[in-house]
Every structure is written in C-alpha cells, then in structure tokens.
Length: 399
Image 1 (tube, rainbow, N blue to C red):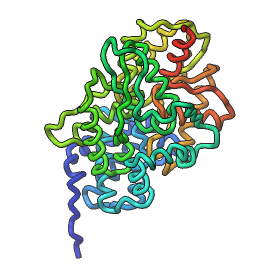
Image 2: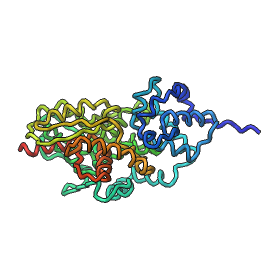
Image 3: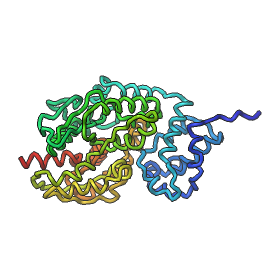
Image 4: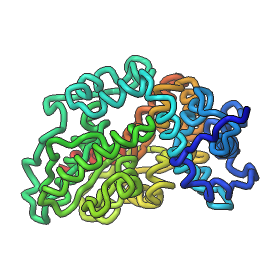
C-alpha cells in the first residue's frame, strides 16, 4: 500500500533554491563541522541532499536528520563559496523549523526557549552559562563588578552633545560578559553621545531560530521592535554582530508586514568613522585578530574592524592563518554538540598560537568565550578581548 505523501510547506517554498545545488562539493572544505570528521552528511552538500530527500518524502523527519541540521554553525562560508548561489543557511533554518513542527521541541529546546524569554531565568542562566556551554571552570572570565547587569543603565557623562545612542546589549553583555557591555558604553560615551541601555529588551531571537522556534523568535522580535521604536534615540548600536545580523536579515521575515523595523548598527561600523576623533594613548601590544563569521561574511565589516585596530597607536597586528575560519561556537550547537565545537576550536587555537601574539582580539562576545576555551584547552592563558575593551584600555590610559 502506497503511503500518503506528507506535505511540508516550510520546505516546499524553497524547492527551487534547493534544486540549484549541483552537488559540486566546493563547500565541503570550508565547512567547519565537515572538516572535523569528513562525515558527508555534515557537509553543506550532504545537508542539502538530506533536505531534498525529506521534501520528496524519500526520508522521514527523524532525530538523525535533526542532528545533522544542529551541527551547522551558521558560519555562512558555504554560501560565499557556492557557485550556484544556494542560500544554504536559509534552507537549513526552514528544515529546522519543519523538524520541530513534526517532532516537537524536546526537553532541551523547551527549556532553552523558556529561559531565553524570561529575564529572571536569564540572570540565573548567566551564572550557569559555563556549565551549559560545557566550558571549563575559569574559562569565561565574568567580572560583574559594582555596576552588575547592564539593563536600565544610563550614561552619566557624554552630555549628549551629539545626540543619543541606545545600546542593545544582547544576552552576552547583559548576563554573561557585562564587562564587555560596560566597555562598549564607555567608548560610545567618549564619542560625545549620551548612551542609554533601554529596559525591557529581550534576546534578539537568533538562539530561538537556532532551536527552530520561529513563533518564539517572532514574539521577541515584535517586543524588541516596540521597545526600540518608543525611544528617542539617534542611533541603536550593539557590540554583538549576531544581534545586528538578526535585526538586518531575520526581522524583516519575523515581523508582521508594515511593522517599523529599527535599524541596528554593529559597533564596528560606527567606530570605524569615530576612532580618529578619540584621544588614545599608545598601546604596546602585539595582538592577532579573529574574524567573527557574522561580522565578516554576515555584515561585511572585516575591513572595518582592521581599520579600527590599525588606528590604535602602538598596536601591532599579526594576522593569523585563515582568520575568518569559524571558531566553532555555533550558537545552540555549543550546547548540543560540544565535542564538535571543541574540535573546531582546537584548530582555531593552533592557528592563533602560531602567531606568537600575546592577545587575541575579536568582535563577537560568543567568539570571545569560544576562543578562550580553545586556548585554555591548548594550555594557553592568552588574553581574549573584544575590540571595545582594547579601545577602552587606550582611552583610560590617555586620561
């Protein structure tokens, strides 16, 4: 007896894009998870073949299918190398949502989704983050200090001579690395703006999308848009490129038609123009740089980040081999597949150590944690900084 064909509208809308994959395999050597164990079903080509098989009812949506989707780090390298222009990450996202629709959220996804939408849970989660992310004790150097969490903070200086900036901290700066958020606010103030951190903001929604929960992601997108639209701010800036990329690429699809979408600017795009106006003391530092996938390939700000570093007097920048290769954080993948994440981080740590640089600078809070973990496992105590922390150091020393 012939089985009834299962309709999968979430995937069907991308059938034409999926058919553009000619299985050439040019994406495989750039895929972090495939490079680790050479498992074809973890390559972009393999994932596209699996999605096509599910769409055509040749394979069921299963736990194994879901597992292969989860090991995508969303680094975008495959899309940039694809000669046919296949939107790989968009297809994988649709497949994740289809899998959740058919298999349910499961315990881990349900718990994470609930935590991400609740401020009190996120506050507790900030302390438990190293455990959830499978990081060793001491890897994530969280220094909460006297200011505590950033939520609701407002600059006491800057006097708003040039206007007002609303800082979108994201989950990392709010709950895990508030020292990073405070550095970003301090640097922004020195550009002559009043800086506020609005109350009531939630996660940008990217982790929820990684979980395949579009409904929850849409809810936080609508919430954040309402909060930001009510502000009288000249600019909205974040120090997390994943947040910026989510606002730019995902919010147009998450928000109802006609909703006013706030423009969120990554801090590197802003500081590239502002760095020349800051009074900075020379830094006698030798550093290397890691390109966050969402900052470089996603937002096109790899050159901007380097321009900022080269504008810091006294700083020596040594480029690492393949600086734009993914560090392996991969969002929710770090929680569900730590062994793959660690393997990718190992290669990144080796390339960093080969430069001989005393410190690593990056533009992403998640990359900062991941690289620190990779270096720690490699036996190194090299410092890992976000760009704004390095600038803050030069500013403070110039006073």
